[in-house]
Image (tube, helix red, strand yellow):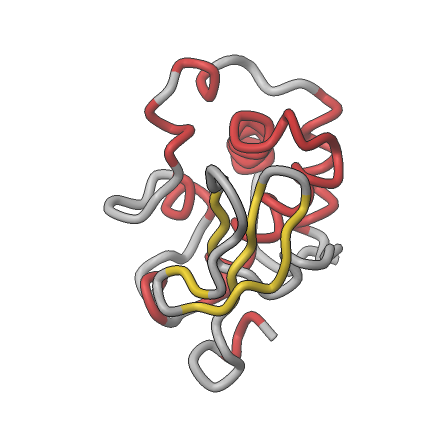
Length: 140
């Protein structure tokens, strides 16, 4: 059962985002990026109070995803990434992105905090950051 509202265009959009942001980290890395995206739609807190759907989340400015300003994002979604997008929309979560609202690819080690949020772990090239349950209960 889906944890956020969506349609076929939303699946396609999330699939393109997860591929563009994390294809190099494999399926699990792309699923984790999907977790962050779904969490941002669910959040209603911090930088995500006005994000209510996948389109708003993907194209949020400021604070959105860097991939949306690069050409690779605009290529057609593949069925394999659409399946991954559906999994995250249906509520599958993967540590360390389980409750994360942010991720980034540092040059070196993951900082303990990023935008005042604590590091929850690293998967391959990306570090993940989550709010506290008191700051953002809707992602827990």
